[in-house]
Image (cartoon, rainbow, N blue to C red; front, side, top):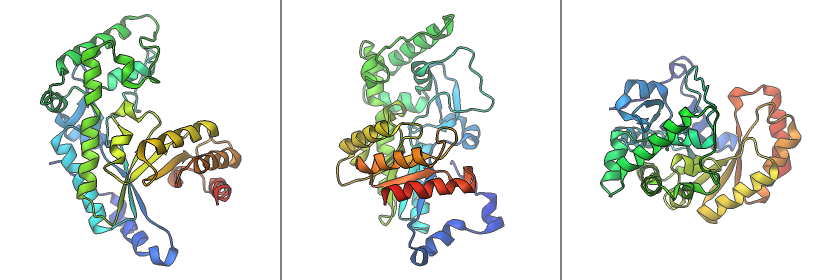
Length: 320
């Protein structure tokens, strides 16, 4: 059984989430819980049979696999516990999906010069759980694995990086349409992610809305946003380093995917130098709201100087 580790500061400083939830009536503030699902190096190291593995069987310890029954049970139980005991207004699911290869593993180095498609191929999971789950519905997993392994081998044999798929990532999984077994595997790959989010929602207390935190190209991690939108309460799309026009495009596309009734938020990072002052942050927030976003998440209070909260205040003023 996969179990989380309780943070030491709970014993040292008390249950901060309980205090926030109890203070809602006095403050008027809703409480949302950013909840990390499968991104956990500590648990991956403790449970290596339940992490994602590439086409050569190498483990990605930072990513528990969404096909693993034990990993799925862990996440479902975690969210059930949060919503039953605290009943926050919203639970925001981070990483209930497959993750990219270059995800800041300890002291990682890349001398090859991996491009985006190389990273994607290395991120594809062919662990025993994915192999069994996909095989049950007739997906040619072994053929897909061999194809991915061949592409990875070829990229490592070149003197400099080359694009093998010119329409990647714009074409989505159809960038691999000429490789039928790999394409079939990629078409299946969203199933464990979608069904996991559905199980999380079904197990959660109905008082808490369940939304997915995702990126512009969520399909890279196995996310089918339209399918997910039918099973949970919405999504927050992170547009951290985008210009306002691009932010608006992402929100419009997201709204088309999940429909008019579901919550749609935008995630904006308050990191310097990608945000060099209040003006660009306010412009991004306004672009998102004008395009149909229902809310804005500013990332992250614990990682930025307190003075930068003035930038957040200016952004809120732009959308109020």
